[in-house]
Image (cartoon, rainbow, N blue to C red; front, side, top):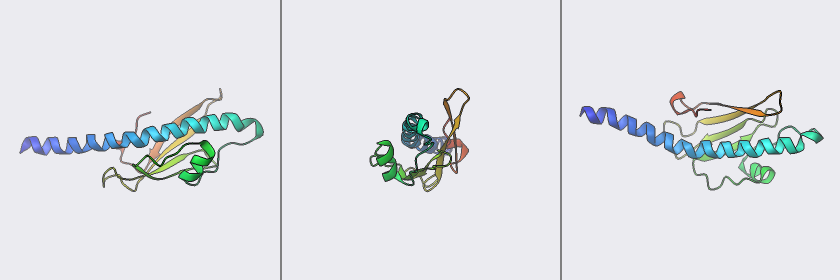
Length: 127
């Protein structure tokens, strides 16, 4: 009984983290494409693309999210470049919540990324 009381919650946490990895990897992939987009178009005054949904992300950045079953919606804020994804098919603890990846432009032109969102801290990705 004691083993089950400790092991089952830990197993559930690890399962959720493993499923979150698909979302985190997809968002990092979008972040990489977004950084390249910004670099390519910064000379003509374009900052961030206007991508209100996954279809716009595919059209603008050339990334298809259809195979990512753990994201029900994704968008990029044209004012800030923040990538936001709505989680799905992970666990009732996090399904429907949002995870965001926000860029910060450094003095040398590089971009640093920060995770935030409604996801419980225990499931928030590390840098």
